[in-house]
Image 1 (spheres, rainbow, N blue to C red):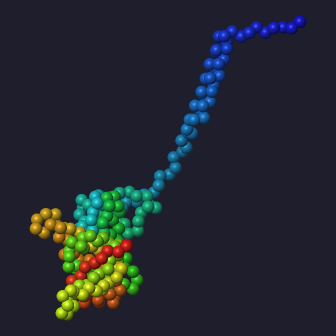
Image 2: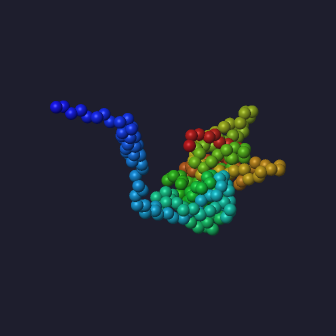
Length: 219
């Protein structure tokens, strides 16, 4: 004789559906939960280095207020850096330095800068006729130096390229903020260029007889 199962009550069916939904939600939460943090690894080794506290233009004479000590990972420390701020105080910047950037030897006027002169070349000073032009240049620029001088009886001066594709080692920046001399470059507009010895001789001769200017090329 067949037996008939009594249908479940609506209450039992609702409870089972609620329990199933709860299990699904729990499984979803467990699946999305981030893994527990593992044991902390060793901290990266750091070393102290002197950095600029503010943006500094080329030609700045460094003071104690321009410098601060920071800790950098050893692997990110540039060559030529130092932890001795007193050693840098009073030195002249040959190139701009950004705030937070380590102050290295190649940013300074001195042996570190001269080490950037390519082999077979020398550092030659050049004073431009238009001092404001000198402040447009930065270390690392490439310039052609033009000499303009009288060409005998002709009314127009002759212009000659006396140095081509010369590397700028140092460039002045405006030193006077106001007054009649506002914008006058530090050092009287003196550039220092890396050129061959023959070109350095031509520059010296041209400076004695002509006015000098530059055209800016690709760095």
